[in-house]
Image 1 (cartoon, helix red, strand yellow):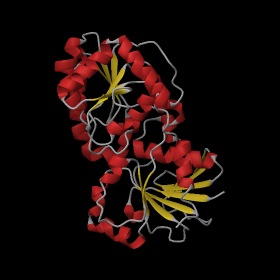
Image 2 (cartoon, one colour):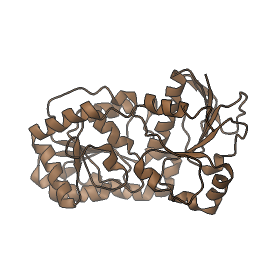
Image 3 (spheres, one colour):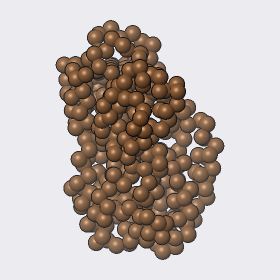
Image 4 (spheres, helix red, strand yellow):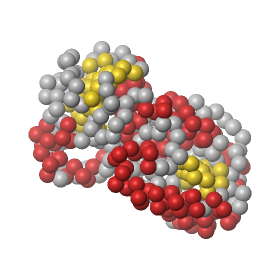
Amino acid sequence: MAHILIADDGIVFDGTTPETGPLGGAESALVCLAETLAARGHRVSIRNRCPGPLEHKKVHWAPLDHPVYDPVDLYVANRNAMLLGRYPEAKRTVFWIHNPAQFLVKPRYLWPLWRHRPAIIFSGDYHRSTYPGWAPSGDRLIIPYGIDPVFLEGTPRPPPPPHAIFTSNPLRSLDWLLELWQHRIYPQVPDAELHVFSGQRTYGSAGDAKAPRMAEVLGRANALKGDGVILKEPVSKGDLVAALTTARVMLYRGDPGETFCLALAEAQAMGVPAVVQPIGAVPERLTPGTTGVVADTEDAFAEAAVQLLRDDALWQDQHSAALKTQKRWTWQKAAESFENLIGTP
């Protein structure tokens, strides 16, 4: 059994947060990895901005300034390069990042990277490509996110009503999608609905600066009730499973800031076909033409959305293919990859 320590200085959350409300992708990833490693027999400690010490699902949570008493076999500095030197006594330190890596070329981040030369953990090929080749690092490793087990229990079902779903950040092209929905998709499928599960609450205080922009986009969504748009608050994982079970297609343009897209991976694992554009990491989450469509143009996006909303046979084929093939990203596999870092230089 190894002692694995993960540090994060982002928003306030702990292991109980996913059970009571929405949580962003990077935070969800930390919780799932920690709980999976603990279930595999490791001692897992988290130091972050949680309200206070807590043990939940065998994971030990405590605030950032709380002491760490036991020797650390693997220290995972999460998101912030300034955390790299926080536990120099750890046998091995790695850096797990979640956003596109261009921000790391700023001098204040380059210094700790030059000094510590950690292995950097990326979530996919696109993600790794965002870190310049000249920039300092140890190994550059790819460990894809896993999907929360609650999304891996989807079963075959008959075609649902023509209900599309959007479950991402409202600033990730929701305004673009609303425009396309109002003028090119909904007029062709007038009984269709677009269910938007999105809001600032998922991002806590980290989203405060962007709250006015989010509110503007969400206001536009709310104003389109007459065009089949139904705006809902972000929900817990359990409620999201129920929503995906009744969804016909996920419509999501993609975003250059998307390095894995858990929202899309979760929908695919539940058997929900998707329509995306070739932006960021989202094409990596589909099997194009089999579990969804990667549309190069707005016209192609709208056409694919209409087809999946209308054509039961096409939907059934892509639904079945997604259930069969899109459950391959699991936290067990991710945890095994992190375990392989223990005891290696």
